[in-house]
Structures are given as structure tokens and as C-alpha cells.
Image (cartoon, rainbow, N blue to C red; front, side, top):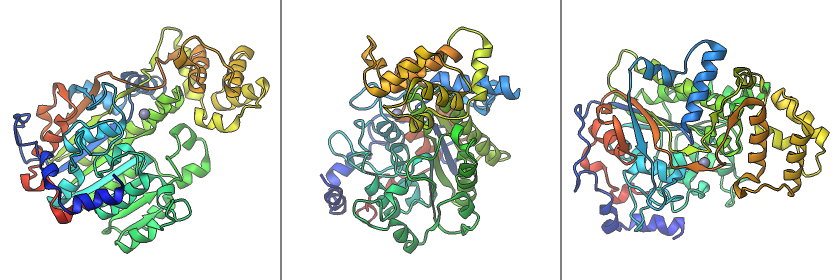
Length: 474
Ligand SMILES: [Zn+2]
């Protein structure tokens, strides 16, 4: 079904299928929540694709380099959060993708991988941001991916495919999401969109103020909805961001975006819901890129501090800190500590390395680029393997280990002891930390869909807001 016909389908009120999406208070009993209705605000922080090894190594690096723990582990250490493991399975797969994962939280149902709040029988589930909006709360999405990407979309959009970023950008405007920040200019700019539509003008007409750089954030009007788009595609990796001065000047950090979002959203006396995604932890894991992974996990960890600052001296905010799935299960294997500490001196991501090389790159050029990116002197054999993979004639017995990401990761594991199981998502139960009203239900072992119930119930959202009314479906 096309996007247009899908919209018509919603607008003409195919309520039969919509009603299937109301299951929260029907049937099975909900997770008990002691303080129902006490959460004025919900802050949902997700480090995308964060295996436990990513959380661990970011904390270990901070302790060794800066003499302090990560905010996430400190919260656990000081027993200030409730902790659970969470099963993130999708409707059709044990190993989920980010779309099905975010939708499980965002609408309370497991959907098939790749779809955005459309059920296995074409049910159109109302996502949590429109639910909160209709209940009078402000709504926001912040990410280091394209703002139209799967994880933010899972809280706000209904789309048959996560790949329909151009349509998702339109839907955010139709649904009046108050704060949107991330990358994804290609889905807004008239010269980049397939329909040549200038979506920025549409947003301005809709009353939004815009920022396309960190400098422009300064002139954002305080009381308007806000769209910040800071890159053509995804926002740069933190390891590149901090070593390229022009990026530092023009692109805000995830923590800076989060702070601004909370400042704007918290002006609503009725409260707000905000999802913040550290998206590139996932991308670095796909790329078997240890510095990309650890530095972006640390950048995500800084958003926990922003949430902590906001909730200091208040008890009306449910804060959830989690990930949507493991990815490539990285970990520090045995060897000298000094090898792990080499990560402190890395300058660039594997994405940056990839941009400097191509299929004609020689062994000496590869060694030079790798040294610039990592401060490591790799061997001729290592550089030769990378050259072969770039040419497309690298051989490895394991079919999963033949790509550039695997070879890059294996070369660096020789020097840092950081190893990887694959270049893709894993089924591991994930870490979940939470505090504030509603978090009582989030201890031990929970299912992904439980989070939707907890957010809606703890915020005291009335049942009438849980499904689309005809006129609100756009
Ligand atoms: Zn992924």
C-alpha cells in the first residue's frame, strides 16, 4: 500500500483494524504500576545497538582515562536506578531491527522488522508521541541518525517501511512533533527529495523555527516548534566530530541537542515525552570500529547527565535508559591493559578511513591512512588484507568475516584486544535502567512491549487518547 493510500485508509477510518491496536487495557493485565499518573514527563534514552561490551568498555575507558565512571554505571553503582534485562524480540524475528524494536516501545506491540507501527495484520497502531500530544503533552525526538530513521520514527510515525524517510519527514509535520533534531537533510531539502518538495518551507509555514547548524540554534525562538537538521545524512561519529574543528563548530553534540530539547519541551506545564537516540553506537558496531563505538557510547552517556540535571530535585519524570538490541557483541579480550589504552589516541572512525581509500589503494597508502586515524603502525600483512578486501578478492573461511568491517575490526583487535562476534545485530537480552514514577515495574526481566504500558500508565494517559480518531490520523 502506498503512503498516500495508507493515509486515505487511515483518514477514511478503517476502525476495525485500528481498534485492534487498543489492546493495552484490554485482555491481559498490565504490569502493575504503583504510582499511576505521577509521571508528568517521560525521557527515553536509547543507545542504539549497544551490546553490554560497549557499555562496559566505555565505562572502563572513562575510569582509566578520566578517573571517573560512566553516568550509566555510576547510577547502578549508587543504586539510584532500577535494573532489568529486556527481551527485544520482533514479531517475525528473534533478532530485531531498530524499527520493530522502537515500535515495541512506541505502540506496545511487536511488529515485523522494517515496519513502523504497522502490525502483522496491517493494524495501524497509534504511536506514543501522538498519544501524548493528544493528552496535552509536548513531544520531541533527538538523534545522531537521520531524524527520519527507524528509532525516532518508531515513536511517532506509521509507515509500511522504515526506508520511507521522505514520507516520515512529512508525517512528523502533520503530527506536530514539537522538537525534532538530528541529521537527514536529504529528506527535507528540495534538491535532494525525489518529489523536489521544499519541506523546510512547509515546516516554516507550519510555525516551526529551523536550525541547520550549531550557530543557528542560538536564534531559535523559545516558544515555537523546532526542527534542527545538522547533516545531509547521519550526524558525524563523535571520534571524527571532536577531531575536525569545523564539525565541532557547526554540529551540536547529542548532549547539547538533548539539553535544548528539554529546555523547550519543559515549558509545557502539562509535561512532555522525549526520545533521545545515540544512533551511531549501532553503526560503529556494524563497522567493527572500536573507537567509533566507545566514543559514541560516551557521547550518549553525557545525555544521561543532562537528564539527571533536569530531574534533580524533582520526582515527576520517568527516565528510561536502554538499548534496542546488541550488535556484533564487542568485548575486551585478555591481553595487556596498555593495548586497550591505545583507543585514547585514535583520531578517526572507520567511516573516515573508508573515505580515504578505494580499490586502487596500495599497502603503503593504507598503512599511512590507518596511522593517521589510529596512531597505530599496522603490518604489511594487515594492510595487505585490507587492500585485498577493497579489491574484492579477500578470502576467509567464515562468510561473515569477509567484509571490510570484519577485516578492519580484526586488524585493530591485533593491537587493542577488542574483538567482535559479527557485523550484525544479536538476540542478547538488553540492559534497562530506569528511575522515577513507573520504574517500579521495570525490575528483573521484562518484555519490550512492557515499556509502552509503563510509560502510558505512569503518565496517567486516558484510554481515549490511545487510538487514532479520524481527524487525528494524518
Ligand atoms: Zn543496526
